[in-house]
Length: 218
Image (cartoon, rainbow, N blue to C red; front, side):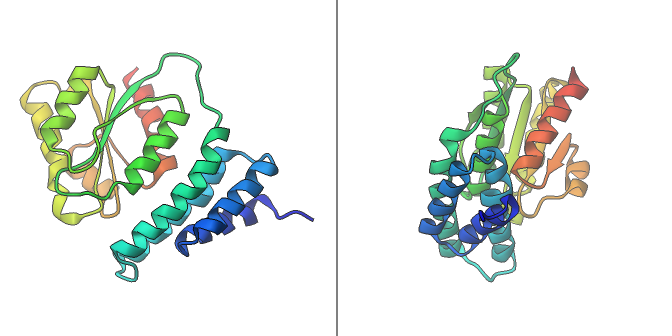
């Protein structure tokens, strides 16, 4: 008897946490062969594994080398699953600028969010990592984006998120953009404190939040 869907997703998550690329690829192929939903596999398998690895990093059980090897396992699984994602193509594509704030070069979570958003029908303008607050604003104005998404994994760079909102207010264009934030040290309380429109705990929640913010602004 074949493994249950939940068991396969759990095994995929474990493969990421245990830095096992071969296992991540093997389980991903099994998921494809069983015609399970690739998006769900990324969310409940690969993304869940990276969330767990991120917590181990915060608890100082994992360090940068381990986190990078977890990322390698995640990416190996993604290579198998990505071609099987069913992209939403109906209707207008809303634009969202995303990036990691200046001072932080950790972009694993941001890259996952990008994949999930693109699969959900968004046009994503990725400004990369270590991006100054002003670049978020300029790129959003330049592209006509509806949302600005900012992430960080470091407490020392969190203030940069508030700088983005400060610039928007200074230029009197705050109402033109929804601002969503996320990352290891971020919380809804911090989002409220700096005046962001929302906080998402992971990649799947980021998609839900983006859709919700656009409903509110419609």
